Image (cartoon, rainbow, N blue to C red; front, side, top):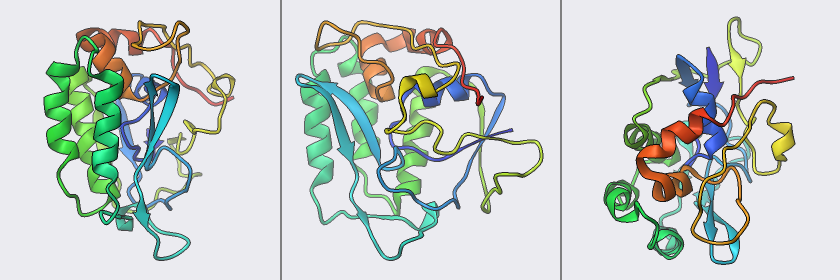
Length: 209
């Protein structure tokens, strides 16, 4: 059984892990980690990769993911959506997918986990990726029997070479002459549409050394 953390519009490597698993458990009770994809995604804009980060309300040092609250006092929603529109407004499949994504993104959620869960469910549906996803009812111990722990394996600070087995398949992006690998699933959906799942399947698989 594969264990992952809940991410915000996850990267392509995250979906490669999902595509190569029959069953995945998302840990809802692990501790939130700063500067990870739990509340961040990376898209490709006119000036290159651009991080979009959800502000959270800090109440204590170690917060279980299911307790993390989004700081809606900050106007991050408008900022994120304007950035997405600017980056992908002219992408081949933006008009088709953006309707679904904007509807879900612009709701107000009870917490970060609820937002990530909703967006992951939507992305799996748009990709037509059939994988059984479970949400844990308690913290999953890293040494539990029968699990492969990939929590924080796909991480902003990790180089691609550290993602063993991941071989990102290049596709046509909107900006730049050089392909930027492992961006948010938004980049792949807007640029490739129905072909997105096939690109994920051609991008290898993740495994730990």
